[in-house]
Length: 275
Image (cartoon, rainbow, N blue to C red; front, side, top):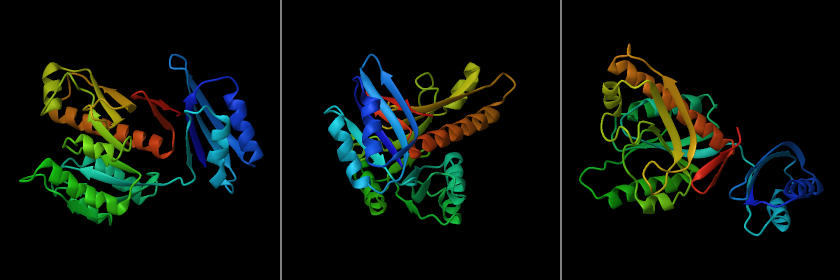
């Protein structure tokens, strides 16, 4: 079982937490903590054995923690996710393969696409695919249809696997810090359509990818992980696009692993990641 805590920092927090867990009969097998000195904020991730007393542990911890403490107890290792896609296959195919071989750390409940390009590959893995077209309807109607499907499955997280539609603040607020997105890190230098073509024309030497939580500020949510690879003049545009997609796939996979393993805490639009 994993316990995540964040609160205002003070002397003796680690000792108090360890004491509560010991009295409850928990054996601590790993404990990682971090203090943001500027914010005077304390973060800790604790792995424990013996979860027979789980109902009371959060209440017992709150008794010794500052009033502002946020405690999250996660007894179940696997999460439930819904994946949203458009037309690009690279991130979804990686998710489906990991899900099939039980290495994802989560169970894919369904895939929702605003085009049907990825319907066949999704259903080949026995996962339901829902087509929700954004054409000839308002964004509100489009999102209501997606929300209706999502609520049937009650997922822990939504994964935007190259889902190329901007979600409204109302939709995002329903899944605060539970929507994970992946994008190329050319932003804001290469904005709009064909970012890899723009980068190719500029002769970039580094390709980046950023996985982050979605907020109302487009592509400015808390960063979970970033990956880069070096490129050079010998790559043609198709090579650059292929390299970029592989990098995006790797970044999203790593971000999901960190989140599903309960290694990420969010505060002040940034993350503390216990790797």
